Length: 134
Image (cartoon, rainbow, N blue to C red; front, side, top):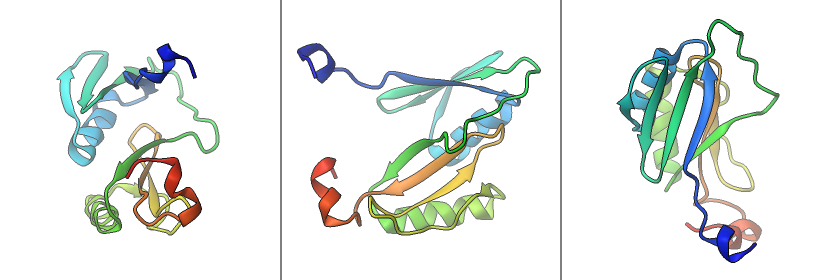
């Protein structure tokens, strides 16, 4: 790491969707994003970074195996509560909540095919506790 990259932070994520409106609505309804602009691309705001969802313009969107974006919650109870909320709303759940050595998590699919991981590191194995901030 250099002095320049030490202070660097995530600015935005940008990815295509075959249904920009449905994808953006998922992020707004389930992940607390606010919509900043609509058009062929939708701009969503999160504390600390933005998400840009671009219209795939009729091209099929194919994601590499296991490509996903992750969001972290403070506790396992919060992970379970969000899982129940999303499942109850008909979100396509790819897994249940499961324990992983780096913390409990689940995976779901956003309209448009993006895989999302919701996790907590509050219950990570001890050997991983020094590798991130809680």
